[in-house]
Length: 165
Image 1 (tube, helix red, strand yellow):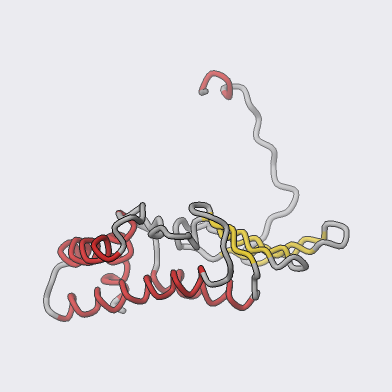
Image 2 (cartoon, rainbow, N blue to C red):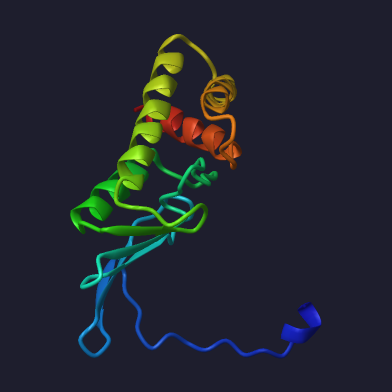
């Protein structure tokens, strides 16, 4: 693949934005909202207004743990859920799992708040960040044994621990 792309030239973006941008595609309005650092610093939700469809990327999953990493923020993730719910989507298209309804958002919020609460409890008991991450991951994997991407649990627990939430 590297050989195929070796001489490829990237195209510069015609439009750039810092946080929020609405694009009119001839009567179809598409709102783009940067919500990171969730999965990555640049995570962006794409909302097709008239259709009520939210392309949530790695910010909202369906029957899967979130793909958190070292730059993830629990606060940012919770704010992203709030912003997405305010759009009032009827359909949510995650990057992993089946297309679903707006109910995917509160489901994920419950998981993230649970990680946040448990990390706070363990931190107040004197557990280290790594021990907290391991315990929270083990507990949630037991609760949702068929869900993939369990390594994201540990990253979110570490983020909650660091944020002092």
